[in-house]
Length: 124
Ligand SMILES: [Zn+2]
Image 1 (cartoon, rainbow, N blue to C red):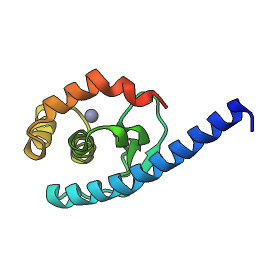
Image 2 (image 1 turned 90 degrees about the vertical axis):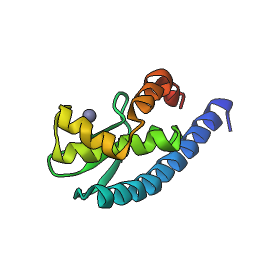
Image 3 (image 1 turned 30 degrees about the horizontal axis):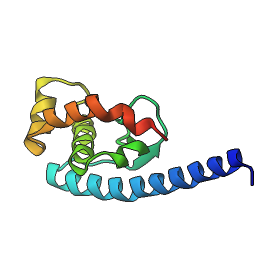
C-alpha cells in the first residue's frame, strides 16, 4: 500500500470509529438530559459539519458534529443541554439561557473552552 493510501485508510478508520463513539455517547446523553429537562425530541443525527457543534430542527431532530466527542465530557454535556433547550426556545433569549444555566451552571466556562480549543477538534 502506498503511504498516501495508508494515511487515507487510517483517517477513514479513525473517523468511522469517532463517529460511532459520538453516536453512542450522544444518544445516551440526549436521552438522559431530555428526561431531566422534560423536553421531547425526535432523533439524534450525527453529522460532518465544518462550523457548528450542534443544531436542532423544527421537527425535534438534534444534529451534532461528531468532532465534539473529542471535547471534555462536561463540554459535550453543555452542547447537549444547549441543543435540547432550543427545542422549546429557538432563540438565544434570556429565558433560553436560564434553561441552559439550570442544567449547566458552568456553561460560560464550556463556551470559553470551545472558543479557545474548538479549532483543535478539526485536526482530523
Ligand atoms: Zn444556540
